[in-house]
View 1 (cartoon, rainbow, N blue to C red):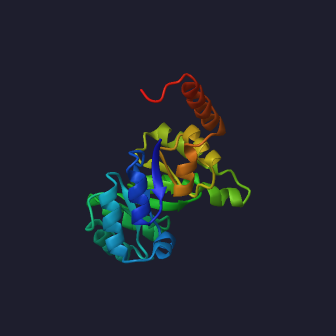
View 2: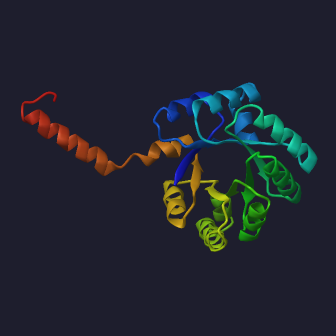
View 3: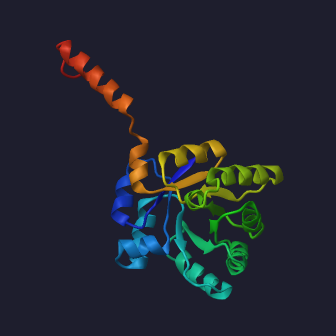
Length: 217
């Protein structure tokens, strides 16, 4: 499963991208507003920091303007993926952009039916929101599993991008459910590497090495 960062902060993204473990980035209007700075310059910096797809979202609500904004976003860099809402207008815009070779990430997906329509519209990615479903007492990870089952049954090429991830358990669950990628906040990316037994084991190894009278290799 590929790991994307859910952030619009160029410096933070560049820092994490240097690990070689970041496959892409997703942004949204809320993250962009939080990051501040010039929107287009920020996206340019993010696209330069990572080789993989960078989702940038339109703010229009009608199909024609979505297409126009999508093309404007695509002009920033070749790895921009146009992020569109899962509405009829968003799906119309997705189909038009896809026909012209512009990849789209259809976001705010909360059902298998919506995921089917996104695939029919030619979406490169569909983003089911796990955490928001869990907030309603529904099974977010179960939705990933069901979309995976349907997509595999019909040979759908649209990639499942697990979103609205709130915990390490969500990341693990997304991988087990068959998500192609998951977009996670930087703090959870940092937490993925940590385990108390890893820390204790390393401490013990180093103590034993020091006790042997050796310093380095």
